[in-house]
Image 1 (cartoon, rainbow, N blue to C red):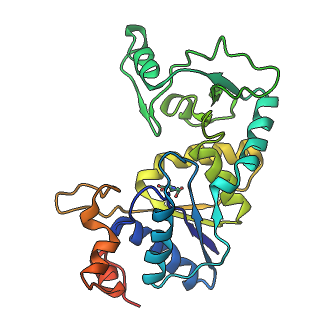
Image 2: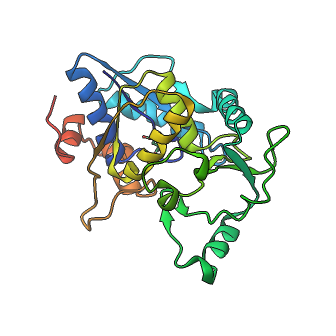
Image 3: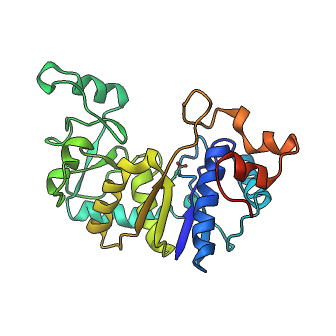
Length: 263
Ligand code: GLU
């Protein structure tokens, strides 16, 4: 069994991240398998080296082990670009120059009914789909969206997620594309992640099918919430692992706090 923890270095790890990493780690080690770490830093406007360093430090403090070198998504843009080119050549994706405001405005038009909120926010109503050119070199100055009508979907993904972004022009990839390519490249057999990502999983399975990649087993764990029942976010510095550490809390205290057996 190969599991992984794939944080983005855009803020401090909090109790929820610790729980996710420990569940994935415990699952791999219980089966004699391997736990991997992957740094998801495609958003270079938000990723910071100090957060990456803190991730290694916090996870090692928790007692987790992983093989080196650690895969970093920012090193793999050319691999993602190869997949984008393949999808472009198959005319599965089209350029879209709408920004968030355009998408919201188009989705709110009277003939569209109420905007549907999908895994990536408002479901794209397909404004650029008709005029979007699909020949020639891969466009580099627009986002590229998946034409769901070309995808072999038996579920209601076309309605619930719509034409998701496969490549943002400033990144040359997207979360969905990178994650499926990397899970396959690393031989991940079991993806262990929070139930907040449950609605991304059908998208990932669809992309695996389109790209000829294997589908791992998916496990979605409960989320760690604060005393008001709100799920923890990166900005919840009060729950940052480093804060607990500075207060003298032990790794087993963290395990107890999130309801995992001590080691
Ligand atoms: N990088 C994602 C995050 O920080 C997690 C990716 C995944 O588990 O699929 O939320």
